[in-house]
Image 1 (spheres, rainbow over the protein chains, first blue to last red):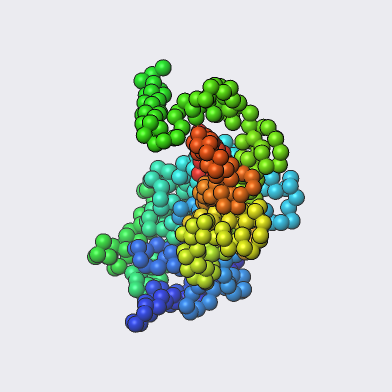
Image 2: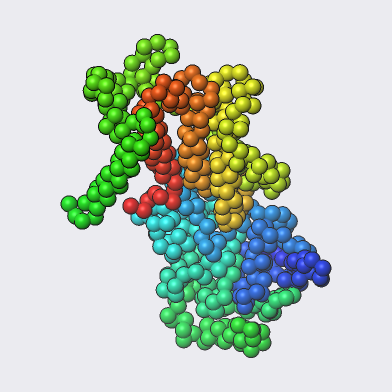
Length: 264
Length: 271
Protein backbone atom coordinates (compact mmCIF):
# COMPACT_ATOMS: atom_id res chain seq x y z
CA UNK A 1 0.00 0.00 0.00
CA UNK A 2 2.80 2.36 0.81
CA UNK A 3 4.33 1.82 -2.60
CA UNK A 4 3.57 4.51 -5.11
CA UNK A 5 0.77 3.45 -7.44
CA UNK A 6 -0.43 6.24 -9.70
CA UNK A 7 1.49 9.52 -9.58
CA UNK A 8 0.82 12.76 -11.38
CA UNK A 9 3.85 15.04 -11.32
CA UNK A 10 3.76 18.71 -12.31
CA UNK A 11 1.14 18.13 -14.95
CA UNK A 12 0.49 21.05 -17.22
CA UNK A 13 -1.75 21.27 -20.30
CA UNK A 14 -1.40 24.14 -22.75
CA UNK A 15 -3.38 24.82 -25.87
CA UNK A 16 -1.69 26.94 -28.52
CA UNK A 17 -3.61 29.99 -29.71
CA UNK A 18 -2.31 31.40 -32.99
CA UNK A 19 -0.76 34.83 -32.52
CA UNK A 20 -1.18 34.81 -28.76
CA UNK A 21 0.34 33.19 -25.71
CA UNK A 22 -0.64 29.58 -25.09
CA UNK A 23 -3.82 28.99 -23.14
CA UNK A 24 -2.83 27.18 -19.96
CA UNK A 25 -5.77 25.00 -19.03
CA UNK A 26 -4.27 23.01 -16.16
CA UNK A 27 -1.01 23.55 -14.33
CA UNK A 28 1.07 22.27 -11.40
CA UNK A 29 -1.05 19.22 -10.74
CA UNK A 30 0.70 16.90 -8.30
CA UNK A 31 -1.18 13.93 -6.95
CA UNK A 32 -0.44 10.50 -5.52
CA UNK A 33 -3.25 7.98 -5.87
CA UNK A 34 -2.99 4.85 -3.75
CA UNK A 35 -3.91 1.36 -4.86
CA UNK A 36 -7.60 0.56 -4.41
CA UNK A 37 -8.35 4.14 -3.58
CA UNK A 38 -11.40 5.88 -4.96
CA UNK A 39 -10.88 9.54 -5.66
CA UNK A 40 -13.19 12.14 -7.14
CA UNK A 41 -12.05 15.21 -8.98
CA UNK A 42 -14.60 17.97 -8.61
CA UNK A 43 -14.71 21.51 -9.93
CA UNK A 44 -16.74 23.97 -11.96
CA UNK A 45 -17.06 23.37 -15.67
CA UNK A 46 -13.97 24.58 -17.48
CA UNK A 47 -11.65 23.73 -14.60
CA UNK A 48 -9.90 21.16 -16.75
CA UNK A 49 -11.01 18.14 -14.79
CA UNK A 50 -11.93 16.20 -17.93
CA UNK A 51 -8.64 17.29 -19.50
CA UNK A 52 -6.87 15.84 -16.50
CA UNK A 53 -8.71 12.54 -16.87
CA UNK A 54 -7.93 12.40 -20.58
CA UNK A 55 -4.28 12.90 -19.74
CA UNK A 56 -4.33 10.02 -17.25
CA UNK A 57 -6.09 7.82 -19.81
CA UNK A 58 -3.53 8.81 -22.43
CA UNK A 59 -6.21 9.94 -24.89
CA UNK A 60 -4.78 13.43 -24.52
CA UNK A 61 -1.10 14.22 -23.96
CA UNK A 62 0.12 16.52 -21.23
CA UNK A 63 2.25 19.46 -22.33
CA UNK A 64 4.52 19.07 -19.31
CA UNK A 65 4.94 16.73 -16.40
CA UNK A 66 4.89 12.99 -15.88
CA UNK A 67 2.36 10.30 -15.11
CA UNK A 68 3.61 7.11 -13.55
CA UNK A 69 1.58 3.98 -13.03
CA UNK A 70 3.46 1.46 -10.88
CA UNK A 71 6.65 3.40 -11.62
CA UNK A 72 6.13 3.15 -15.36
CA UNK A 73 5.61 6.19 -17.52
CA UNK A 74 2.18 6.46 -19.07
CA UNK A 75 2.56 7.07 -22.78
CA UNK A 76 -0.70 6.90 -24.70
CA UNK A 77 -3.90 5.01 -24.00
CA UNK A 78 -3.99 1.41 -22.82
CA UNK A 79 -6.37 -1.16 -21.35
CA UNK A 80 -4.76 -1.04 -17.90
CA UNK A 81 -6.43 2.37 -17.60
CA UNK A 82 -10.00 1.60 -18.67
CA UNK A 83 -12.31 4.52 -19.28
CA UNK A 84 -16.04 4.77 -18.63
CA UNK A 85 -17.12 7.54 -20.96
CA UNK A 86 -19.79 10.05 -20.10
CA UNK A 87 -21.90 9.07 -23.08
CA UNK A 88 -21.23 5.34 -22.59
CA UNK A 89 -19.61 4.97 -26.07
CA UNK A 90 -21.06 1.55 -26.70
CA UNK A 91 -20.82 0.41 -30.30
CA UNK A 92 -24.44 0.63 -31.47
CA UNK A 93 -24.21 -2.25 -33.93
CA UNK A 94 -23.12 -4.74 -31.26
CA UNK A 95 -25.28 -6.33 -28.59
CA UNK A 96 -24.53 -5.82 -24.90
CA UNK A 97 -22.72 -9.16 -24.89
CA UNK A 98 -20.73 -8.41 -28.05
CA UNK A 99 -19.70 -4.98 -26.79
CA UNK A 100 -18.10 -6.53 -23.72
CA UNK A 101 -16.76 -9.49 -25.67
CA UNK A 102 -14.98 -7.16 -28.09
CA UNK A 103 -12.99 -5.68 -25.20
CA UNK A 104 -12.24 -8.97 -23.41
CA UNK A 105 -11.23 -10.70 -26.65
CA UNK A 106 -8.76 -7.97 -27.49
CA UNK A 107 -7.21 -7.59 -24.05
CA UNK A 108 -7.21 -11.27 -23.09
CA UNK A 109 -6.48 -13.13 -26.32
CA UNK A 110 -5.28 -16.15 -24.32
CA UNK A 111 -8.82 -17.05 -23.21
CA UNK A 112 -10.46 -19.96 -25.03
CA UNK A 113 -14.08 -19.76 -26.19
CA UNK A 114 -15.55 -21.11 -22.96
CA UNK A 115 -13.44 -18.93 -20.70
CA UNK A 116 -14.30 -15.92 -22.83
CA UNK A 117 -18.02 -16.57 -22.58
CA UNK A 118 -17.75 -17.17 -18.83
CA UNK A 119 -15.89 -13.92 -18.31
CA UNK A 120 -18.27 -11.82 -20.41
CA UNK A 121 -21.28 -13.33 -18.67
CA UNK A 122 -19.72 -12.76 -15.25
CA UNK A 123 -19.49 -9.02 -15.89
CA UNK A 124 -22.98 -8.84 -17.39
CA UNK A 125 -24.24 -10.47 -14.18
CA UNK A 126 -22.17 -8.09 -12.08
CA UNK A 127 -24.24 -5.17 -13.39
CA UNK A 128 -27.46 -7.24 -13.37
CA UNK A 129 -28.06 -7.10 -17.09
CA UNK A 130 -28.61 -10.79 -17.85
CA UNK A 131 -32.01 -9.96 -19.34
CA UNK A 132 -30.47 -7.43 -21.77
CA UNK A 133 -27.59 -9.66 -22.84
CA UNK A 134 -28.57 -9.81 -26.51
CA UNK A 135 -30.11 -6.36 -26.82
CA UNK A 136 -28.57 -3.58 -28.87
CA UNK A 137 -27.57 -0.39 -27.02
CA UNK A 138 -30.43 1.55 -28.60
CA UNK A 139 -32.92 -0.88 -27.10
CA UNK A 140 -31.93 -0.28 -23.47
CA UNK A 141 -32.20 2.74 -21.16
CA UNK A 142 -29.45 5.28 -20.54
CA UNK A 143 -28.73 3.89 -17.10
CA UNK A 144 -28.45 0.37 -18.46
CA UNK A 145 -26.10 1.56 -21.19
CA UNK A 146 -23.85 3.12 -18.59
CA UNK A 147 -23.89 -0.13 -16.60
CA UNK A 148 -22.71 -1.93 -19.75
CA UNK A 149 -20.00 0.74 -20.07
CA UNK A 150 -18.88 -0.01 -16.50
CA UNK A 151 -19.00 -3.76 -17.11
CA UNK A 152 -16.97 -3.37 -20.28
CA UNK A 153 -14.35 -1.27 -18.49
CA UNK A 154 -14.07 -3.70 -15.55
CA UNK A 155 -14.06 -6.81 -17.74
CA UNK A 156 -10.57 -6.06 -19.01
CA UNK A 157 -9.21 -6.05 -15.46
CA UNK A 158 -7.78 -2.54 -15.49
CA UNK A 159 -5.37 -1.29 -12.86
CA UNK A 160 -7.23 1.98 -12.80
CA UNK A 161 -10.84 2.69 -13.68
CA UNK A 162 -11.29 6.20 -15.06
CA UNK A 163 -14.81 7.60 -15.08
CA UNK A 164 -15.56 10.85 -16.87
CA UNK A 165 -18.77 12.21 -15.34
CA UNK A 166 -20.14 8.71 -15.72
CA UNK A 167 -23.62 9.51 -14.49
CA UNK A 168 -23.77 13.11 -15.68
CA UNK A 169 -26.27 12.48 -18.44
CA UNK A 170 -28.71 10.54 -16.24
CA UNK A 171 -31.69 11.59 -14.14
CA UNK A 172 -31.13 11.74 -10.40
CA UNK A 173 -32.93 8.48 -9.51
CA UNK A 174 -31.06 6.48 -12.14
CA UNK A 175 -27.93 8.21 -10.98
CA UNK A 176 -28.45 7.10 -7.39
CA UNK A 177 -29.16 3.58 -8.59
CA UNK A 178 -25.92 3.50 -10.55
CA UNK A 179 -23.93 4.87 -7.65
CA UNK A 180 -25.26 1.95 -5.58
CA UNK A 181 -24.23 -0.45 -8.34
CA UNK A 182 -20.77 1.03 -8.44
CA UNK A 183 -20.30 0.83 -4.64
CA UNK A 184 -21.54 -2.75 -4.57
CA UNK A 185 -19.19 -3.75 -7.40
CA UNK A 186 -16.33 -1.90 -5.77
CA UNK A 187 -16.85 -3.95 -2.57
CA UNK A 188 -16.33 -7.07 -4.67
CA UNK A 189 -13.56 -6.23 -7.09
CA UNK A 190 -11.55 -3.50 -5.29
CA UNK A 191 -10.29 -1.21 -7.97
CA UNK A 192 -8.45 2.05 -8.09
CA UNK A 193 -11.02 4.50 -9.39
CA UNK A 194 -10.78 8.11 -10.52
CA UNK A 195 -14.17 9.78 -10.98
CA UNK A 196 -14.70 13.16 -12.57
CA UNK A 197 -17.87 14.73 -11.25
CA UNK A 198 -19.59 18.02 -10.57
CA UNK A 199 -21.97 16.49 -8.07
CA UNK A 200 -21.01 17.10 -4.44
CA UNK A 201 -23.10 14.25 -2.98
CA UNK A 202 -21.73 11.85 -5.53
CA UNK A 203 -18.17 12.86 -4.71
CA UNK A 204 -18.63 12.39 -0.95
CA UNK A 205 -20.67 9.21 -1.22
CA UNK A 206 -18.26 7.40 -3.52
CA UNK A 207 -14.80 8.64 -2.65
CA UNK A 208 -12.01 8.14 -0.16
CA UNK A 209 -10.62 11.50 -1.16
CA UNK A 210 -12.11 14.43 -3.05
CA UNK A 211 -9.75 16.53 -5.17
CA UNK A 212 -11.08 20.07 -5.55
CA UNK A 213 -9.94 21.99 -8.60
CA UNK A 214 -9.67 25.77 -8.82
CA UNK A 215 -11.18 27.56 -11.81
CA UNK A 216 -9.40 27.78 -15.13
CA UNK A 217 -7.37 29.09 -16.82
CA UNK A 218 -4.35 27.75 -14.99
CA UNK A 219 -6.56 25.50 -12.93
CA UNK A 220 -4.86 23.38 -10.31
CA UNK A 221 -5.64 21.37 -7.22
CA UNK A 222 -7.10 23.72 -4.64
CA UNK A 223 -7.82 21.42 -1.71
CA UNK A 224 -7.86 17.71 -1.01
CA UNK A 225 -10.53 16.39 1.30
CA UNK A 226 -10.31 13.05 3.12
CA UNK A 227 -13.67 11.36 3.47
CA UNK A 228 -13.49 9.27 6.63
CA UNK A 229 -16.66 7.26 6.25
CA UNK A 230 -16.95 3.51 6.79
CA UNK A 231 -17.96 1.30 3.88
CA UNK A 232 -20.46 0.07 2.88
CA UNK A 233 -22.02 3.47 2.89
CA UNK A 234 -25.74 4.08 2.99
CA UNK A 235 -26.88 7.29 1.38
CA UNK A 236 -29.94 7.66 3.63
CA UNK A 237 -28.12 7.15 6.91
CA UNK A 238 -25.29 9.39 5.79
CA UNK A 239 -27.57 12.39 5.55
CA UNK A 240 -27.27 12.83 9.32
CA UNK A 241 -23.70 11.66 9.72
CA UNK A 242 -21.52 14.54 11.04
CA UNK A 243 -18.54 13.48 8.89
CA UNK A 244 -20.71 13.43 5.77
CA UNK A 245 -22.11 16.85 6.59
CA UNK A 246 -18.60 18.19 7.26
CA UNK A 247 -17.36 16.90 3.89
CA UNK A 248 -20.33 18.32 2.03
CA UNK A 249 -19.92 21.71 3.64
CA UNK A 250 -16.24 21.75 2.96
CA UNK A 251 -16.76 21.15 -0.76
CA UNK A 252 -19.69 23.56 -0.89
CA UNK A 253 -17.64 26.32 0.64
CA UNK A 254 -14.75 25.61 -1.72
CA UNK A 255 -16.92 25.68 -4.82
CA UNK A 256 -19.31 28.48 -3.92
CA UNK A 257 -17.28 30.76 -1.62
CA UNK A 258 -13.59 30.41 -2.36
CA UNK A 259 -13.89 29.60 -6.05
CA UNK A 260 -17.36 30.70 -7.00
CA UNK A 261 -17.96 31.20 -10.70
CA UNK A 262 -19.70 34.47 -11.39
CA UNK A 263 -20.36 34.06 -15.06
CA UNK A 264 -22.67 31.06 -14.79
CA UNK B 1 -60.66 -1.70 -47.72
CA UNK B 2 -60.17 1.59 -46.03
CA UNK B 3 -60.11 4.98 -47.62
CA UNK B 4 -56.31 5.22 -47.76
CA UNK B 5 -55.76 2.00 -49.71
CA UNK B 6 -58.55 2.88 -52.15
CA UNK B 7 -56.72 6.14 -52.80
CA UNK B 8 -53.45 4.29 -53.25
CA UNK B 9 -54.94 2.29 -56.11
CA UNK B 10 -57.29 4.89 -57.54
CA UNK B 11 -54.90 7.84 -57.75
CA UNK B 12 -52.16 6.10 -59.78
CA UNK B 13 -54.92 4.70 -62.00
CA UNK B 14 -56.09 8.26 -62.74
CA UNK B 15 -52.52 9.28 -63.62
CA UNK B 16 -52.23 6.17 -65.81
CA UNK B 17 -55.38 7.15 -67.71
CA UNK B 18 -54.00 10.66 -68.11
CA UNK B 19 -50.72 9.30 -69.54
CA UNK B 20 -52.67 7.08 -71.96
CA UNK B 21 -54.67 10.15 -72.98
CA UNK B 22 -51.57 12.25 -73.67
CA UNK B 23 -49.95 9.33 -75.48
CA UNK B 24 -53.02 8.90 -77.71
CA UNK B 25 -52.95 12.64 -78.38
CA UNK B 26 -49.31 12.47 -79.49
CA UNK B 27 -50.06 9.36 -81.58
CA UNK B 28 -52.85 11.15 -83.42
CA UNK B 29 -50.69 14.19 -84.23
CA UNK B 30 -47.27 12.62 -84.93
CA UNK B 31 -47.29 10.49 -88.05
CA UNK B 32 -46.44 6.80 -87.53
CA UNK B 33 -46.28 7.21 -83.73
CA UNK B 34 -47.57 3.97 -82.16
CA UNK B 35 -50.87 4.19 -80.31
CA UNK B 36 -51.24 2.60 -76.86
CA UNK B 37 -53.20 -0.29 -78.36
CA UNK B 38 -50.56 -0.89 -81.10
CA UNK B 39 -47.94 -1.00 -78.39
CA UNK B 40 -49.99 -3.36 -76.23
CA UNK B 41 -50.39 -5.77 -79.13
CA UNK B 42 -46.68 -5.53 -79.96
CA UNK B 43 -45.91 -6.38 -76.37
CA UNK B 44 -48.40 -9.13 -75.66
CA UNK B 45 -49.42 -10.32 -79.12
CA UNK B 46 -52.68 -10.27 -81.07
CA UNK B 47 -53.97 -8.87 -84.37
CA UNK B 48 -52.03 -5.73 -85.33
CA UNK B 49 -53.19 -2.67 -87.29
CA UNK B 50 -52.31 -4.37 -90.59
CA UNK B 51 -54.58 -7.30 -89.73
CA UNK B 52 -51.70 -9.75 -89.11
CA UNK B 53 -51.53 -12.09 -86.15
CA UNK B 54 -48.23 -11.41 -84.29
CA UNK B 55 -46.41 -12.77 -81.25
CA UNK B 56 -45.65 -10.11 -78.64
CA UNK B 57 -42.06 -9.33 -77.63
CA UNK B 58 -43.01 -9.90 -74.01
CA UNK B 59 -44.97 -13.12 -74.64
CA UNK B 60 -41.94 -14.80 -76.19
CA UNK B 61 -38.84 -13.17 -74.69
CA UNK B 62 -36.77 -16.39 -74.75
CA UNK B 63 -36.51 -17.09 -78.48
CA UNK B 64 -33.14 -17.42 -80.18
CA UNK B 65 -33.39 -17.04 -83.93
CA UNK B 66 -29.67 -16.60 -84.52
CA UNK B 67 -26.67 -14.87 -82.98
CA UNK B 68 -28.03 -11.43 -83.91
CA UNK B 69 -31.72 -12.06 -83.29
CA UNK B 70 -32.57 -13.03 -79.72
CA UNK B 71 -35.58 -12.43 -77.49
CA UNK B 72 -35.87 -9.54 -75.07
CA UNK B 73 -34.89 -11.72 -72.10
CA UNK B 74 -31.46 -12.43 -73.61
CA UNK B 75 -30.98 -8.77 -74.45
CA UNK B 76 -31.69 -7.86 -70.85
CA UNK B 77 -29.42 -10.60 -69.51
CA UNK B 78 -26.53 -9.29 -71.61
CA UNK B 79 -27.12 -5.79 -70.30
CA UNK B 80 -27.37 -6.98 -66.70
CA UNK B 81 -24.12 -8.95 -67.03
CA UNK B 82 -22.29 -5.82 -68.15
CA UNK B 83 -23.96 -3.67 -65.51
CA UNK B 84 -22.99 -6.02 -62.70
CA UNK B 85 -19.46 -6.53 -64.02
CA UNK B 86 -18.87 -2.75 -64.07
CA UNK B 87 -20.70 -2.27 -60.80
CA UNK B 88 -18.66 -4.93 -58.95
CA UNK B 89 -15.37 -3.56 -60.19
CA UNK B 90 -16.57 -0.12 -59.05
CA UNK B 91 -17.26 -1.56 -55.58
CA UNK B 92 -13.90 -3.36 -55.43
CA UNK B 93 -12.03 -0.17 -56.27
CA UNK B 94 -14.40 2.42 -54.82
CA UNK B 95 -14.73 1.10 -51.27
CA UNK B 96 -10.97 0.94 -50.50
CA UNK B 97 -10.41 4.34 -52.16
CA UNK B 98 -13.32 5.77 -50.15
CA UNK B 99 -11.89 4.32 -46.93
CA UNK B 100 -8.50 5.84 -47.70
CA UNK B 101 -9.93 9.26 -48.52
CA UNK B 102 -12.14 9.20 -45.44
CA UNK B 103 -9.30 8.26 -43.10
CA UNK B 104 -6.49 10.38 -44.47
CA UNK B 105 -6.71 14.13 -44.85
CA UNK B 106 -3.76 13.97 -47.24
CA UNK B 107 -5.43 11.37 -49.45
CA UNK B 108 -8.57 13.49 -49.44
CA UNK B 109 -6.65 16.58 -50.53
CA UNK B 110 -4.80 14.59 -53.17
CA UNK B 111 -7.81 12.90 -54.76
CA UNK B 112 -10.72 15.24 -54.16
CA UNK B 113 -10.11 17.72 -57.03
CA UNK B 114 -10.00 14.88 -59.56
CA UNK B 115 -13.08 13.21 -58.14
CA UNK B 116 -14.99 16.48 -58.37
CA UNK B 117 -13.89 17.02 -61.98
CA UNK B 118 -14.41 13.46 -63.24
CA UNK B 119 -17.69 12.86 -61.39
CA UNK B 120 -19.90 15.04 -63.65
CA UNK B 121 -18.44 13.69 -66.92
CA UNK B 122 -21.14 12.01 -69.01
CA UNK B 123 -20.68 8.33 -69.87
CA UNK B 124 -21.06 9.32 -73.52
CA UNK B 125 -17.88 11.36 -73.27
CA UNK B 126 -15.92 8.41 -71.89
CA UNK B 127 -17.26 5.96 -74.42
CA UNK B 128 -15.22 6.90 -77.53
CA UNK B 129 -12.02 7.00 -75.51
CA UNK B 130 -12.66 3.62 -73.92
CA UNK B 131 -13.75 2.11 -77.20
CA UNK B 132 -10.48 3.34 -78.68
CA UNK B 133 -8.52 1.77 -75.82
CA UNK B 134 -10.26 -1.62 -75.68
CA UNK B 135 -11.58 -2.05 -79.23
CA UNK B 136 -14.11 -4.42 -77.67
CA UNK B 137 -17.82 -3.92 -77.05
CA UNK B 138 -18.02 -5.72 -73.71
CA UNK B 139 -14.91 -4.16 -72.22
CA UNK B 140 -16.00 -0.72 -73.37
CA UNK B 141 -19.47 -1.03 -71.87
CA UNK B 142 -18.14 -2.46 -68.59
CA UNK B 143 -15.39 0.11 -68.23
CA UNK B 144 -17.79 2.95 -69.01
CA UNK B 145 -20.10 1.71 -66.28
CA UNK B 146 -17.16 1.35 -63.92
CA UNK B 147 -15.86 4.84 -64.47
CA UNK B 148 -19.24 6.56 -64.18
CA UNK B 149 -20.68 4.57 -61.29
CA UNK B 150 -17.62 4.53 -59.01
CA UNK B 151 -18.01 8.12 -57.76
CA UNK B 152 -21.01 7.73 -55.48
CA UNK B 153 -19.33 4.68 -53.90
CA UNK B 154 -16.11 6.59 -53.21
CA UNK B 155 -17.90 9.68 -51.93
CA UNK B 156 -20.38 7.83 -49.71
CA UNK B 157 -17.74 5.49 -48.28
CA UNK B 158 -15.57 8.44 -47.31
CA UNK B 159 -18.60 10.17 -45.78
CA UNK B 160 -19.25 7.02 -43.77
CA UNK B 161 -15.69 6.98 -42.49
CA UNK B 162 -15.93 10.64 -41.52
CA UNK B 163 -19.13 9.95 -39.62
CA UNK B 164 -17.26 7.65 -37.21
CA UNK B 165 -17.81 9.08 -33.78
CA UNK B 166 -14.72 10.26 -31.88
CA UNK B 167 -15.95 8.26 -28.89
CA UNK B 168 -15.78 4.98 -30.79
CA UNK B 169 -12.22 5.75 -31.78
CA UNK B 170 -11.42 6.48 -28.13
CA UNK B 171 -12.72 3.03 -27.23
CA UNK B 172 -10.46 1.61 -29.95
CA UNK B 173 -7.50 3.58 -28.57
CA UNK B 174 -8.01 2.40 -25.00
CA UNK B 175 -8.23 -1.19 -26.25
CA UNK B 176 -5.12 -0.55 -28.39
CA UNK B 177 -6.64 -1.72 -31.65
CA UNK B 178 -4.26 -2.07 -34.58
CA UNK B 179 -5.04 0.05 -37.66
CA UNK B 180 -6.56 -3.03 -39.31
CA UNK B 181 -8.75 -3.74 -36.27
CA UNK B 182 -9.88 -0.12 -36.26
CA UNK B 183 -11.02 -0.54 -39.87
CA UNK B 184 -12.72 -3.92 -39.50
CA UNK B 185 -14.24 -3.46 -36.03
CA UNK B 186 -15.15 0.23 -35.95
CA UNK B 187 -14.86 2.07 -39.26
CA UNK B 188 -16.46 -0.51 -41.56
CA UNK B 189 -19.49 -1.24 -39.37
CA UNK B 190 -20.18 2.50 -39.08
CA UNK B 191 -19.65 3.04 -42.81
CA UNK B 192 -21.67 0.09 -44.09
CA UNK B 193 -24.99 1.95 -44.32
CA UNK B 194 -23.24 4.78 -46.18
CA UNK B 195 -21.45 2.36 -48.48
CA UNK B 196 -24.73 0.71 -49.39
CA UNK B 197 -26.35 4.07 -50.09
CA UNK B 198 -23.44 4.74 -52.44
CA UNK B 199 -23.86 1.33 -54.05
CA UNK B 200 -27.56 1.94 -54.55
CA UNK B 201 -26.88 5.26 -56.31
CA UNK B 202 -24.10 3.61 -58.27
CA UNK B 203 -26.26 0.75 -59.51
CA UNK B 204 -28.87 3.30 -60.60
CA UNK B 205 -26.24 5.14 -62.62
CA UNK B 206 -24.91 1.88 -64.07
CA UNK B 207 -28.36 0.98 -65.34
CA UNK B 208 -28.77 4.47 -66.84
CA UNK B 209 -25.41 4.19 -68.55
CA UNK B 210 -25.87 0.76 -70.08
CA UNK B 211 -28.66 1.83 -72.43
CA UNK B 212 -26.61 4.70 -73.83
CA UNK B 213 -23.43 2.64 -74.00
CA UNK B 214 -25.06 -0.25 -75.87
CA UNK B 215 -26.68 2.11 -78.36
CA UNK B 216 -23.23 3.25 -79.40
CA UNK B 217 -21.37 -0.05 -79.13
CA UNK B 218 -24.03 -2.19 -80.80
CA UNK B 219 -24.16 -6.00 -80.75
CA UNK B 220 -26.56 -7.23 -78.13
CA UNK B 221 -28.21 -5.73 -75.08
CA UNK B 222 -31.35 -3.82 -74.21
CA UNK B 223 -29.83 -0.49 -75.26
CA UNK B 224 -28.82 -1.81 -78.65
CA UNK B 225 -32.19 -3.53 -79.01
CA UNK B 226 -34.01 -0.20 -78.56
CA UNK B 227 -31.75 1.49 -81.12
CA UNK B 228 -32.17 -1.43 -83.50
CA UNK B 229 -35.95 -1.21 -83.25
CA UNK B 230 -35.64 2.48 -84.15
CA UNK B 231 -33.70 1.52 -87.27
CA UNK B 232 -36.32 -1.14 -88.05
CA UNK B 233 -39.07 1.50 -87.71
CA UNK B 234 -40.62 -0.57 -84.87
CA UNK B 235 -41.42 2.49 -82.81
CA UNK B 236 -43.82 0.62 -80.50
CA UNK B 237 -40.93 -1.55 -79.39
CA UNK B 238 -39.01 1.55 -78.31
CA UNK B 239 -41.83 2.36 -75.95
CA UNK B 240 -41.88 -1.24 -74.70
CA UNK B 241 -38.12 -0.98 -74.21
CA UNK B 242 -38.47 2.21 -72.17
CA UNK B 243 -41.07 0.61 -69.91
CA UNK B 244 -38.99 -2.57 -69.48
CA UNK B 245 -35.82 -0.55 -68.69
CA UNK B 246 -37.78 1.45 -66.15
CA UNK B 247 -39.25 -1.63 -64.49
CA UNK B 248 -35.90 -3.41 -64.25
CA UNK B 249 -34.23 -0.26 -62.86
CA UNK B 250 -36.99 -0.06 -60.26
CA UNK B 251 -36.57 -3.72 -59.30
CA UNK B 252 -32.77 -3.34 -59.03
CA UNK B 253 -33.26 -0.34 -56.75
CA UNK B 254 -35.76 -2.25 -54.58
CA UNK B 255 -33.36 -5.17 -54.20
CA UNK B 256 -30.41 -2.90 -53.37
CA UNK B 257 -32.62 -1.09 -50.89
CA UNK B 258 -33.48 -4.35 -49.14
CA UNK B 259 -29.83 -5.44 -49.03
CA UNK B 260 -28.86 -2.02 -47.69
CA UNK B 261 -31.49 -2.21 -44.95
CA UNK B 262 -30.31 -5.68 -44.01
CA UNK B 263 -26.77 -4.43 -43.36
CA UNK B 264 -27.84 -1.16 -41.71
CA UNK B 265 -27.51 -1.59 -37.96
CA UNK B 266 -29.56 1.56 -37.33
CA UNK B 267 -32.58 -0.20 -38.86
CA UNK B 268 -32.21 -3.35 -36.79
CA UNK B 269 -33.79 -4.18 -33.49
CA UNK B 270 -36.42 -1.50 -33.67
CA UNK B 271 -39.33 -3.71 -34.48
